[in-house]
Length: 132
Image (cartoon, rainbow, N blue to C red; front, side, top):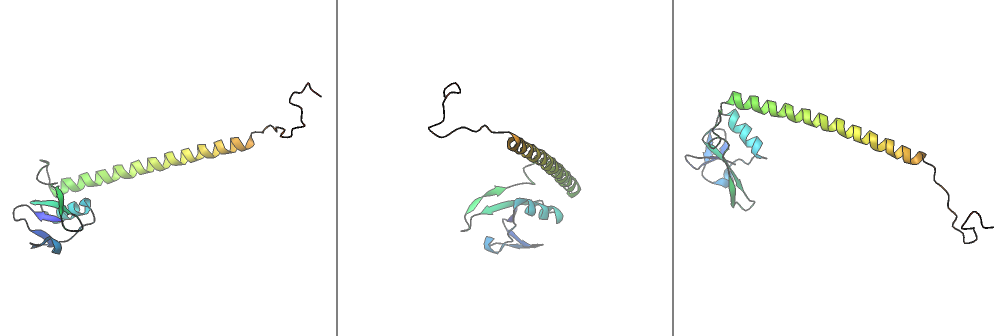
């Protein structure tokens, strides 16, 4: 939930603040809440996390504690850069997994191609080639 630091009120929807946390808008995760705050240019806020029984678990203060330039354009640019980096890393991970799967398949084929020696399991078979 988004809580206004100066008043202690919770965000219900755009420009509507409520005193009761039970009436506040619940975001799926912190990233969604931060994106919302950036899109409507909210800065005097912190994110509050509650349990299912409405006990406070803690706060995340992404705007006041960072000391960074928090203009929307800068944050959006950084977010886009992070998303691109994430995509590149996922692509690389996918390539490496394909390579690993290829190596595993090749190893499996090598094992199949290898001839196995037959061993006698009967008691009558000679244990030494020199014995009759």
